Length: 424
Ligand code: CA
Ligand code: CA
Image (tube, rainbow, N blue to C red; front, side, top):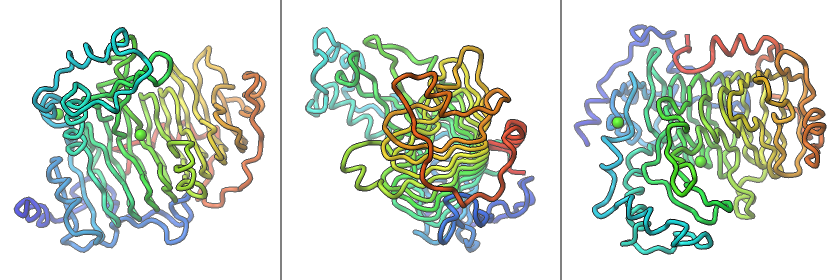
């Protein structure tokens, strides 16, 4: 381990060589640019000294760089696409784990649909699944310390199958990286989740968990080569191996997501992950997030689904595809402001579906355009979805915006500039 760190630490930085605007790795969030600019703002590792600037090309090097130097400011430059998913799913399986035995034991015809598998012992198929899942968990998760900038070099940097954990820390910047969603090798069968049961998966591409001052900028999140359409079915249910693209949970606060592309995925972004009393106690008064100039393309739902937080979503372009369900989920005690956004819906998709009411919570929606026409999202929702009346007026006015573009200009701007590989 010491050897690896030594190799990493001697890597110098010459931004000009990267073909990237000089100094991108030391850029900080501009003043006033969304909720992450609140208070002390977000500087990531901009103040790193030369011994805390790393260039990495493998998952092992990346994890070693994260672990080196504690919370001293650091910059980690990612070169090329790094495989974070290990050699194979089999490499994580513990001795004795057998998916065929799992399917045989928990088939609804024999196991039924009323008992979860949580009480199953360690030597059961579920116990062996749990142990195998723990191996994958330890491998694909990487914990980002405070005062860190992780930035892709050039136009083709990113991770396949990584799960970035921004957990319990302050001041993190993640830029110019393409994240291909992790695939859970060991989804768990829950016979009690819906009347038909469900396969549930772990691992978001990135999760902001109880952290503050986080800037996610010019990143791409996608299922890439592994869309849900390629996944098999067992017990009549899709064998879901994906979780979220970017989840913001457990009292996280002051997050700005700008100029990202969220693509080709089902459940995309949670802001708050539960209505439970314990979660409410942690989330209430937090979960303040700004989304601006992002592309949300070919997603099913949650762009985002909001609980508790004051979320400002402006100047984003939403492009719906087949299987579109909704864009904004209005959840418990949320105060969403959605303004100056553009929506491109295919024939047959209804503008009333853009908002989805989960709980009684107010929302501000103004100056949004659907297929080029200015549209009152709340009025069209209330007209098209009987029994789900949304109330207008989120009760706060976003102040942290640097530049608001005309909604009609947003598809062109975002189309040319959002996502990884476009930092300039
Ligand atoms: Ca691999
Ligand atoms: Ca998640």
